[in-house]
Every structure is written in C-alpha cells, then in structure tokens.
Image (cartoon, rainbow, N blue to C red; front, side, top):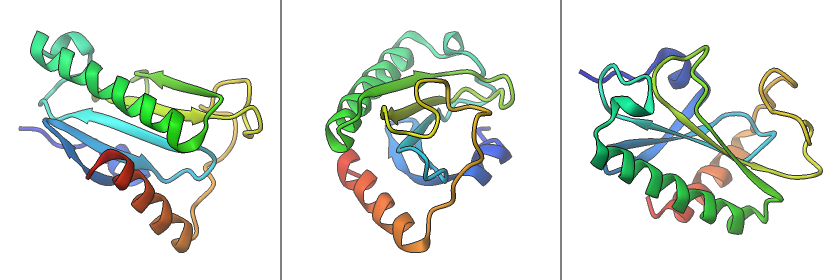
Length: 134
C-alpha cells in the first residue's frame, strides 16, 4: 500500500494527482518547485515502475517542465531524482533563475528554505493548479 514519505508530506503541499502521480509543491519560496511522486508502493527507483508507468511519468515531467518554463520565464528548469535522504521515488522539477539565491549551483544544502507568507502561499498554489489544470 502506498504511503507518502513523512518528510515529503512535511515539506510540501499536495496540489492533486495526474493519473497515478501525486503532484506536490515545495514550501520553499526560494524557487518555483514541484515534486512528482508515483503512487507505487515501495518504489525507490525509476526501474521499479513498469514501462507504461515510466512513459507516463516522463511525459508528465516533460509537460510540467515546459509549462513551468513558460509560466515563470525561467532561465533553466532543473529535473532531478536524488533519493539519498528520502528513498521513496520522487522527481523534483525546479524553475531556476540567474538571479536566484543558489545560482548557478545546486539548490540542495545551500540555503535554508524560505517560507511563503499565507498570501504568497495561496497565490502560488492557485498559480500552480491553474498551470497544471488541477
């Protein structure tokens, strides 16, 4: 049975689902940042998904990456599946800007998460949901 990792649950807000993929938004206001989690019990690697699931996941990553590029006028879209801390399979899609706090380096472990104000949070959730059609 699928259960979202507690760290992901704590650090994100669930926006909805696309097929079998849970779409989460990071609570870090430093970057527009989505996390996709296939709702497949015990999946830790991409190869844990069957071929059809892998294809749908890649199509979803591609679509969301393009949508984020347009929506946020990003200089770069970073896509990554690390899993060293949270083993549950999850894919980060992060809009990056030459002006962001970590540019040009990686976002992980560089700067503390910057919380959204309630107003910013509501606006970003609405923007993301509209972009995603959720």
